[in-house]
Length: 482
Image (cartoon, rainbow, N blue to C red; front, side):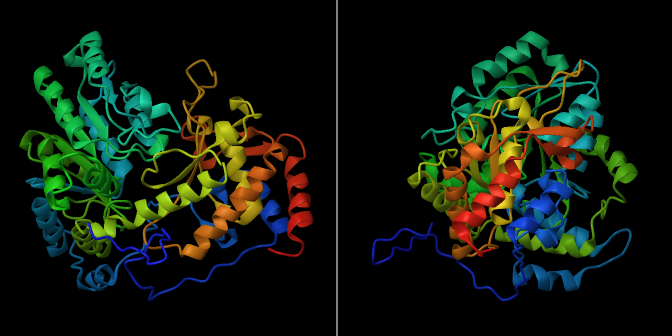
């Protein structure tokens, strides 16, 4: 991986691209930000994008496309069946992953729906290094349950352990033995554990998981949505992998997996997804549901223009100087916040910078959604939209009891090639100000609570008048500044 050093000794990430298309942004006055937050029910998902200055909600579907991707979109074949666009994407999948069968879908959760309907039944148990919200919901809706087999380091917010996304091999075997291999349809490994800070797993750990799956005759499913970041971390952190190319690491991971699925909104920097496998029986079992739920087998609910962009985007993911752009900017932001004493997840992972809300606002009880409250506060303070990854992202148990999350994180995503250095510094500045005034932040309570995936469209209200007080303090400290 190429290295560029500054003569002054300063350590800052270097953009390996130039900006050629721009989108205008607006920063509302703080009073209007408070109004917008209230109208959104204190849920950052419900904010209108026109009211957002820095959209750090997610990297899903918002990574910058390259000129090659935009050019490829003009060559799309929009035939309903037998599209040449599909065959170009299928060929790229085969080239990179070595998988013979490719089933397109409109995004990652569509792939999860199909996998769950084919393999999960009442009583099924699916072990995984950590759950993701939609994954868990699909498994639960089909009568199964998730068993997490994360290592102890996974839940330590501050750590130097390089692969906190590793599966605990001993615990994995215990889960299989306790429930019986016949009740374990597959083991899922998420390349970049989204809910605990975008933390990667190692190639060696995937090999160990593969050996356990082989021992008990169980399929290994890889969620490759955040593969790009995981590839970077294997290349830079794992002993014995620094001499491997990104393509070699990718193929090694694919060869260990029975089924790979991904959201191209993350992997490929376009909007779509897909499932690939070398198992004909698995492909045959899933393809009927692709046609039923997604579309014909040569478009699967995707725009063919997006499919052309995905084919190019997958190819560009094999470029070290492309996949490093997320992690190095995240690492910079994490380091800058740590210098100011702000609690963040370490080591810096993929996807975004994750603030430890359990420590940041330690006076807010978990049943008042501290990470959600911090997300609302940061929008008010700076027009910055982040995403709650904590108790608000869980769902109540069958008896209606709150399920407290293992961690309370505010995720500030850094989509690749989107933000400038000055914008990142602005975000750091507003977070530092908020930390200095953290005891003013209060909790939230639901006023509209959906039963499933409530964090997407539930509405909450502030407990007390802490938001108005925060606005007054902002004006006191910043004067007429936006």
